[in-house]
Image (cartoon, rainbow, N blue to C red; front, top):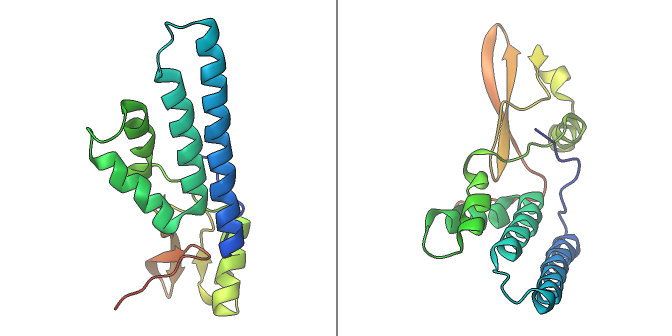
Length: 159
């Protein structure tokens, strides 16, 4: 699976990503209506597929609550067209993980040390990824551990 090398974390970066995604959807509509002028019998299936793809790509790159939105929308099969449900369903089980260099950078930024300085063994490639973090295998004092790395910029309010 392809990994993610960068997650937008500031409000401006995240807003820019949403605007870029909206622009892609707008271009999809322009293409659709241009093609529909030539072929009036054309249905919206391809438009829905293209929009679902672009929106999901935008949400998965933002991670966190944005990806949670895709997860929630995929659960109601009658709310959105089928193309959206199918694409957003990927957020339930197929989320791209962070790349190993970004994992190591994130770990060092939060702990002041690399995971190789803390654990006897650490696998920088995740074994599973979700909307707010991913899991890595590590060994310390002959004990196998699961280490959860929270994505950069994802805040949890546990009140």
